[in-house]
Image (tube, rainbow, N blue to C red; front, top):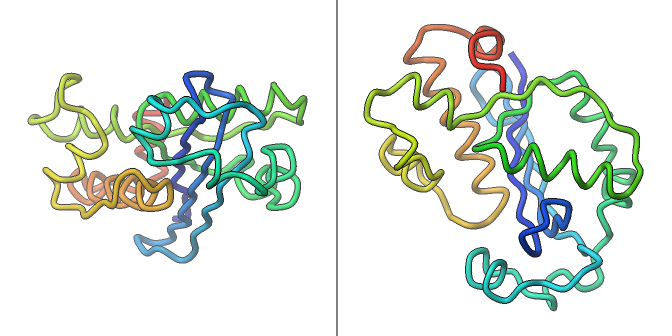
Amino acid sequence: MKFFSLDIKTANSDPSSICEIGIGTFEDGLLIDSFRTYIDPKCSIDPYYTENIHGITEEMVHGFFAFDDVYDIYRLREMLEKKIVVHHSPFPRIALEKAIKKYDLDSFKILWLDTEIVAQNTWNEFTECDSTLENMASRLGIKIQYPDALQCSLAIGRMIIEASNKLGIGIDELVKRFNS
């Protein structure tokens, strides 16, 4: 079964200020493709929020496409529409939806699956208090190079594969059970 894993970094606390996106494509439990780009958020980068947390500076995103261009050039709608997209916490989902609205782009349906919810319902050791991506990946023995959006998205994909294996059900069944 094919699914996509998604991680998004933003320039500030505004979810529509996407400045980096990472997407992994998984099929039958294997990574078959990946995509990562910086995005010019068309706003200033908050030094505390983005530079300190994600390590992304204004110089790093300068010259990259804005979100609406990335949406068109990389055909995000065609890639993700009606597909299973795995993310960690509600934030990436909200950010993508807000950026699509901000740039007045065509919205589309995605079958969302949140690893935070899946993990909390698959492993007893996870609670809302310790559900950061870094913590969960580490406790499951999944290597992660935080905060790179692609590396985070790949860890997200691997977490879903681990949950699928532990529960003995496919990704499509995880979506039915835990659709966020």
